[in-house]
Image 1 (cartoon, rainbow, N blue to C red):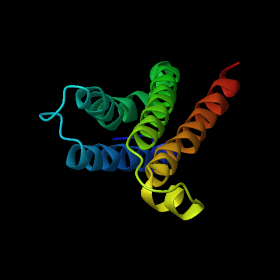
Image 2 (cartoon, rainbow, N blue to C red):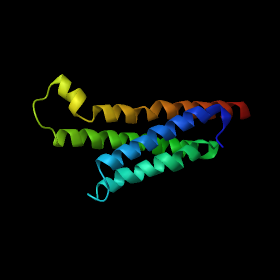
Image 3 (cartoon, rainbow, N blue to C red):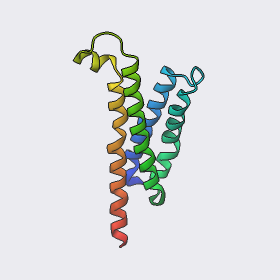
Image 4 (cartoon, rainbow, N blue to C red):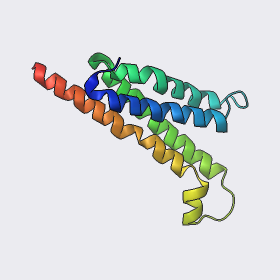
Length: 129
């Protein structure tokens, strides 16, 4: 189904995206608040469309940009959520354990996966010149 050389990276990207989507749907169901639909939409897009886009050289750049956008928007939104819903004193332990820092780090793991896939497509393109 996926190109053999990048299959692992594409599957890893799917797992990160789909796991994040499921986690988000559990914590922030879209039916409760309309603002949760944006994250759910990005999660669906990055879980199902982006991996297939990364499988083709012509759409890989768009997949990379969508992936990067989702990481930036998700990071900003989760950091904003942590700041606006913060309770208690701000300590290093509280920042690590009581904020969305762990979720942001997991989200950022999508960046090196996308970079690995794009490196493959750049190498393929260099061979065609």
